[in-house]
Image 1 (tube, rainbow, N blue to C red):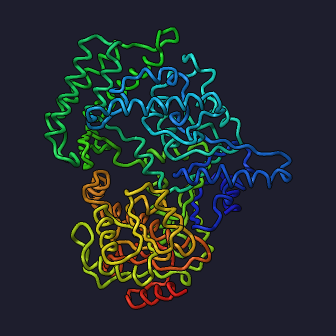
Image 2 (cartoon, one colour):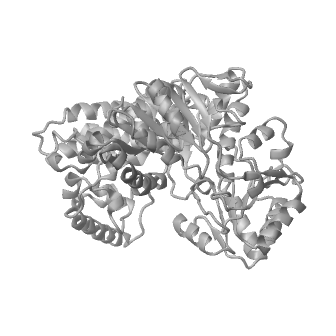
Image 3 (cartoon, rainbow, N blue to C red):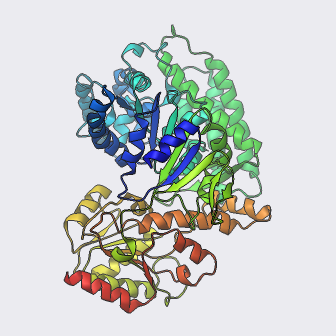
Length: 635
């Protein structure tokens, strides 16, 4: 991996590297990065990996190479502006009206709740003030103990609301600006996919210029870019924008905004949840037209933000919010074929409703913005789907792959690929068991037959089970079943915070941890605390997922198979991530049990999905799986 990256930089050719757990891929890309003549940027998808790089890998590596290089390389972390304390916001933090901040997008509080919430908020802001006088970075992650999201919003500034250091009275002491200065001077800059996506959409105005970009956890990148390009409108957001701008716009403009918010409320109430496949309903179109006109008038009334304004920060905030609403309304009214629009209605009981728009595909954006003027190394444990790199390469905006000597695509125009393998002996360390005798899953939740199979597997091992479920309903039913039929400690996602649940699961070897999609990627429990991973069904996107459905329909309309081109690759990545929870070190042993018979019986995609997984010893025999679990229990 080190040699391949070094060659890619010298040849100015992009590289895809699949490197599984335990290969040491972070050191594999950091080491050649130190030899690059110019800055290097490393982007990660998760905070856990970012922390690993800056707290462990980089300090150790820099100390080791200093005698060789004759100097001590430097590194810096670059986060979004909202991660840093804003002195301008902190000055006015106590002045914000609770109705503007405390209960955004939330149901009205109970009688007497205002005082309790405001008091709690006040205490947290007081603690932030004390910390502000001590911190050198203003980074939220250094505030220990932390504060909740509501409190932090009072003292941080989203990028869209910032007037810039030159026009801000606190520009000289801005923590966010200082972080960017450190990044421009560092040899290696560690950032995240979300900020990298925003940087691409902002024409590279945030991340400092660099010669090498390493994208770790790259299977997440396209989704983060899609999220960054997504926009939404809610009546609550429009009402807040009106309150924020009310002292800066004529009364007529403020009234127009209120009318537009009311019209959007009615339109969202009348429209069914889901994708708008036949265009905007009349009521929503009328609301958007009102909104476009109202925000245009408001922006005209506010005018330019100047350094000698009495409140440049407040003026910029009002302008930024109106500008975002105006652009989103315009975008929705255009009904561009490259966008997907849908109505979102929360099932959490808070009544939240939104009109959302997102790009149909981000491959074009990535092709234009990710690869220009730098070498890009893309790496992950799951870059080959069905044993090939080309599916992921296309999703990342790279050109089609050319066949190699054995007929399998290995490279494309301007890029090459490498699979460094794994230090694990998968056939000896693990078994992939598919319960092919179970009926094809049809109903929502956990079918009775699958529940009975789960119970047999867990009882054979005596706990030590990570259950990955396709829905919260299925996870809850599984937990209720195991609690009723066994005395094992059953941990269910949502009953406590995820870090606490994972810690309990790791410490109690008789416990089981059940949950949904965030557990498929976020759990790292090496050793004998996790020796059985159960997956209830293949993780295809739900039919009501608007983006996946729209992308699938677009492929169908062009004569292809949307299911094969969209749904199967999504399921392959998710399944590989879930299966990867089992073997985390060279001493781990265990069983992955898939309770979805389609992995064995489905022609075509069943084999494709199996080829996307580590090469475990494969069986469909229940007695073999139970025998292995019994032996693990005895050992």
